Image 1 (cartoon, rainbow, N blue to C red):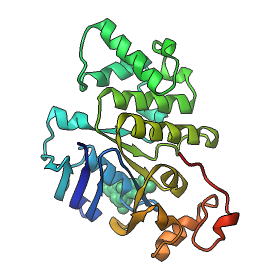
Image 2: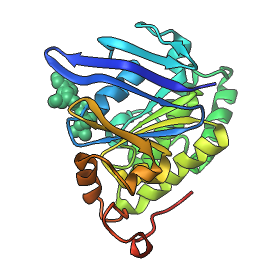
Image 3: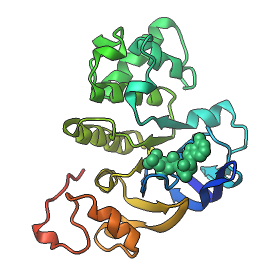
Length: 262
Ligand SMILES: Nc1ncnc2c1ncn2[C@@H]1O[C@H](COP(=O)(O)OP(=O)(O)OP(=O)(O)O)[C@@H](O)[C@H]1O
């Protein structure tokens, strides 16, 4: 089981305390949203979750087991990052098959070149891209397609948990909801546990059943989807007010635009 939890986690950059005593958890096959203004510590938390940054104190637990300061290969496999920007995260000199194949070595299905290509083909189908495009290069794809390639790459490691750092912010509005739907489908169909970092509360509302609100490295509020209708903290209200398509605490829900459901 892939319940992910952080307990009293703090992460510093020198004298800057970027994540300050944060605790949160997401059950197996659940989706947790982490929201907050710029500089609130979201990316730092994401990088600590995937093992790119070592916490100064506190613990990260997967399936109830604390992850060590130096992660084993299997621990690195288990928690994968979907980076924010598919324009910079994919190596322009590597084909789609090469980029995805690189991460297959983490997974549980190593094998011959033919087996690797067959698995790449399956992964491209999973993210609804044409398997026939596996020998193309990233520049031949649109932003939304590149984000799907980055997603297939993360899935190649056969992760238990996907940490999606602003998964739609580099994309055109027209393709954002398709990427969110894809993530929701993976959560449902593969039992993937998702942590979705976003300054866009609309994305989190659509994908996540629980939310943690961060400010200056600390958790200021947490709750389920109902928090969007009834936030306790003025800071959360301000974040909500910045997203016109959400019902928000003060408007009449019956007249508010309905955002996509799964
Ligand atoms: N590499 C770094 N070195 C020093 N300080 C950093 C570094 N990265 C982030 N910080 C600082 O840590 C704090 C948290 O930053 P972080 O990027 O985690 O926030 P964020 O919520 O993800 O913001 P954004 O939405 O703008 O990415 C900020 O004060 C930031 O200036």
